[in-house]
Length: 244
Length: 268
Image (cartoon, rainbow over the protein chains, first blue to last red):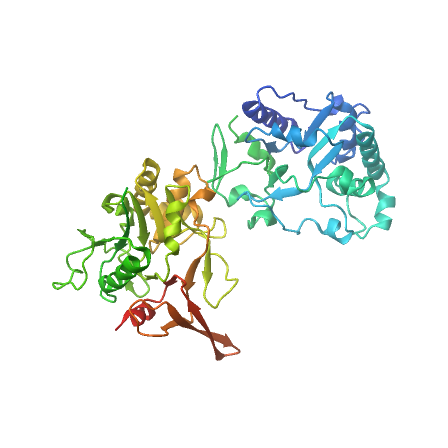
């Protein structure tokens, strides 16, 4: 999904992502869902906070089997084999992240809401779903939680001003649907490199200020380490530097 | 197919590496049954030699590397590939105490090049693994290296030369201090470069390198030339006081970081 805001061109990021996918999987089917393609329209017309539209991805997807990716990502290698593992499931939300060294991260800095409420530790940035009854229920729940966030907050341990992020909403939905139906923790291949500050130990949120990176035609290297997992670069204007 | 060990020993103003190499070579002969080639310079070679090495290669020591305690003649290790007369070589630091035949197992690994990527410290369990820097990766160790005469192994040693010659550049990339050249760092970078900036698991010796580190001393339990039993003493500092802790070890290879301690261990 790519919904442009006043400050960020997510469609630009999504186009770079599309090219990176086609480089390693030339036969892949890709759809970039922009605001005008949302089946129920933009539910946040007056806001830059567009996450409330996320649940529409289920209906908007033209495919029976879909992997939803966030726009500010880069796919460095063929991940076709994921389908072999995922195809028998209805919904799988990724639950593993890595640092730039490709190591699985156990940093909890950004996950206080999840830990405080003992919710499933999921990352919506990579979500697989199959057109199915379970997936329909899942995305209806996502819609319901986004819409009634104020009510959910009352029963959750969180800051009263806590915003409904897609990760929090998916996590609650996974909890309600059952982690056994919505996650696949042993499938650590389905993970992304998350370029957030505390996961990588950088002094600021902008990792490009600290790390030496190389954007090459066939790979991205950070501190010489080739990025082999989906690379969630987080710093949006980094997409202009990617060579695809 | 020939097999042997290779030692580098250039005497410094402070340490007699040739003497260390003789003792280590004898232990390699005894426990591993391998011939030993020594790389040294004519200044380090005594007029009267009490031990017959399989080969002696006379080379020029690079004396440009400095450490807190003085000059450190550790550069030029990349020449190991060129100097080894063997098809399969174990390259060892001279302060590595061979006490078993364990190193022979390295030849059976399915690789043409390997070294340690993990260390343990005697009496210091759980010590953190050394990294090049917080923004980099774990250090490989040049203390024990096995290589075969293959194109890839040659490339790694050629690359080690390149890294040594451009050490400051790599220090800038990886965020470590370049004042002293370390073969461990050079080897880490060289193997990664040759392997597409990764460390293949096949290139790693599947057990930990055992160090005798800070505040730790090792003593022989008897004076046999090929003694394999030692007492390890650890000065455990707690609230400004030292508590002495001891263990006995037997048949374990170890690397002595403290050169004085190594010299004591090998003295008659």
